[in-house]
Image (cartoon, rainbow, N blue to C red):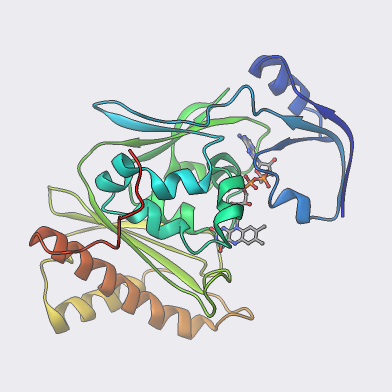
Length: 276
Ligand SMILES: Cc1cc2nc3c(=O)[nH]c(=O)nc-3n(C[C@H](O)[C@H](O)[C@H](O)COP(=O)(O)OP(=O)(O)OC[C@H]3O[C@@H](n4cnc5c(N)ncnc54)[C@H](O)[C@@H]3O)c2cc1C
């Protein structure tokens, strides 16, 4: 069970940052993951009134406020149109609707969880983490950094015209993923791949050439080669060997969906419940 002595709503981010400098202070996002821990917290910082819970779209980017819920990611039509439905695909299997209404983008990205579907997916986009003190940092750099007491204010996705697809394997519908994979391709012939739940934290690589334009056997063989560039581990959900095999299959499948999008076919999943 989690215990906290003080519950504080700081007046502004400057005050929140100063308070968070104390080791005994903890920022609450949706509090969904934190509350399951067994831990004594000195001061729990509630930043709900200071951090945005909106997805703002401009010509250049989407700015996803740290307090945006996973359910908002799932339902946002503009973001999902831009990401070929990958934003929805990466969150829709997480626990249940009520849970996704509560868990936040800030907590999911800042937590840098090894099992994170969200981290895997956004690593293949041109994503930046916006921090109160640290400014904007590419997500690919942020994942490798240690938590440093900063406050995440937003996740930014630049509109650089990538086509993306997300795939994962779960033993059960709402369990943690055994493996997660995201693939994106730009207009200059570069493919980006992220593999997460290896069971280590997601990592990303870039390679020249488009996987989606290859067909059948060639795509499968290339996907297997790319899967071998990541390292895998064993835990109760699967062995390293199984994960490596899965990665090849899921990379090939994601690339196939991007190929379908290129040909104007249905490369994304159902979008009937999307909102503007
Ligand atoms: C039972 C369960 C099953 C789950 N299954 C999955 C799954 O299958 N796939 C998946 O991807 N995820 C899964 N998750 C994780 C979930 O999706 C969220 O990522 C997680 O709950 C964290 O989000 P939160 O808003 O609850 O953050 P919190 O629990 O409130 O915070 C998490 C961490 O982030 C810090 N933090 C929060 N917001 C900020 C901020 N703005 N700035 C700085 N630090 C901040 C907190 O201090 C804390 O260390 C699961 C979680 C639970 C509890």
